[in-house]
Image (cartoon, rainbow, N blue to C red; front, side):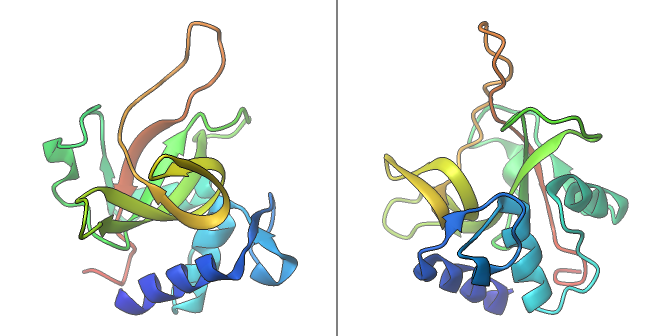
Length: 169
């Protein structure tokens, strides 16, 4: 698990953009599920699917997924969340897909100084310490649910996390 997290963090030093459809840092960028796919494959996880919806199904089928319904960052539902777990959202963009998972990241843990939860991956507009970031980076991880707004626009909603099969039995 430590090797996986080190390789994920190494990608944040390459100045990679958010690039929809890419799972290869050699293209200059990656999308969220491409980042997860690349890091897991690089660390010997052979059966990881390519897109976030398939990654979610992969964890659900292996009985490694933990749903989170709470809107609180200190919820008991997060007690089993460990560094290296995969995080999943719906509503980050509109797409016809079943299940409608639209975003995935890798959980890093809590920062030593602040105690805040952080994650790593690729995004086109998440925040770290109050600063908006694009591309492959470290980001704040907060549970807050936004759901569908009154204006009808989608809002990202965190739905849960999963332990990578084979790495934490």
